[in-house]
Image (cartoon, rainbow, N blue to C red; front, side):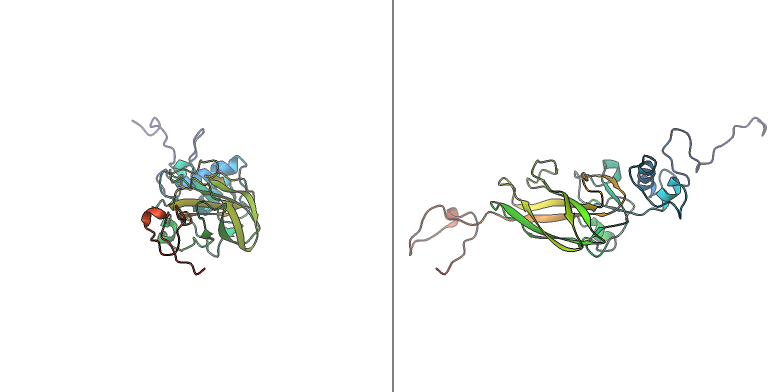
Length: 254
C-alpha cells in the first residue's frame, strides 16, 4: 500500500465529534474521570471556573483541582458512582483542604486523611443520643459564608435516603465555629453512623455531583445508646441487675 492510499491516523489526543474525550488525556489517565466531569459541567454551564489563565474548558478541566469524599461502598463516593466533586475554591470545612484524583472509599471514612494531608478537620460531633430530641455538632468554616448540606445514616443501612437522614438542608454557616442542632429519630441505631457534610456557595446539594466550589467531608460518627432507666421502682437496699436498665447504671447522690 502506497503512502497516498494509506488511511490517515488521528492523533490520540484529539477530540472527535460526539465523544467525551478531553484533549491531551488518554482514557486511562488518572485525571480522566475528574477532567471529563469538569469539562462536561463547564460546557453545560453547570459550574463556572475562571478560564482567563487557562483558556478553553478542556484545558481548565485538565488543570482544575477537586476534593472528593471517602465514605465506603455502597455510599456514592467514586466519580463513576456519581460521588461528590468540589472544585478547590471558596468556602471550606476546617483549616485544611486538599485535592484528589478521585474518591477514596474506606471503612472508617479516613481514606482522604491517610492519602496525604489530614484535612477532615471541619466537623466535630458533640452528641447524638437516641431518645433525645436533638443532637449537636460543631462545623468550622473558613473562607465563608457558605451553605451546608449534611446527611447521617441513622439506621445503618448503607444509604442516606431516609426522610430524617438529611439533617441540614441549605443551612447558612459563617466563618469560625457554628454550633448546630439536628433531630435524632427515635428509631436510630446505636453505634457507628456514616455522615457526609458538603459546603458550597450555591447550597441545595445532593449526595453526589459536581459543584464549582466548597468541600466535602465524610465522617464515621457514633450514635449513643438511650439514657439508662430502670424498668421498675426500687427502694433503698434493693439490688439492680442487667435486666433492669438499658445500659450501665450510675449511682446518684440524692
